[in-house]
Image (tube, rainbow, N blue to C red; front, top):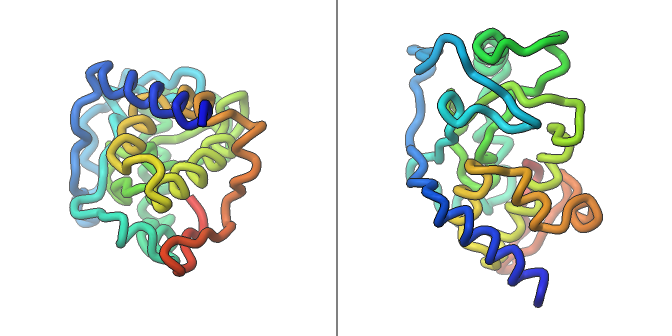
Length: 198
């Protein structure tokens, strides 16, 4: 019980910190990439620059939709879309190292209604370091299960992920707790199988 209260209190602080509603909608594939920035983005300790990657949710995303088996896999954009975007964003963020050191990731995960193709929700996340893509994947699995089980509100989770996923990671119990939620596992909700991965 104390664990749940801790998470709720952290989510409340994040929401009261001025994190407004996340934009909804998608960027049409034919107009890719129309970036709102061209340079000056700064990645800091596993977090994207909020000016360049504020996060975005999918218009009309509901729990019934995102909690259906296979949703994330169906919603995920093709690599032919994400790879050129990743290269453009690596340049905008002035990131060092090889391209393979980064994973083009959704700030608000698909598994909790993140916008699949909106550049405002995608950024080149580091694969290495203390706040790596693998660590965020653990958190994404946990947030999807919390949302689909009705334990934490979907909008709260979306805002917390967009605002500071590393803070939510710690509030959720960090590696000690989240390693029990590996990507690719299944969960039961209302008798239906749910969740194939972040």
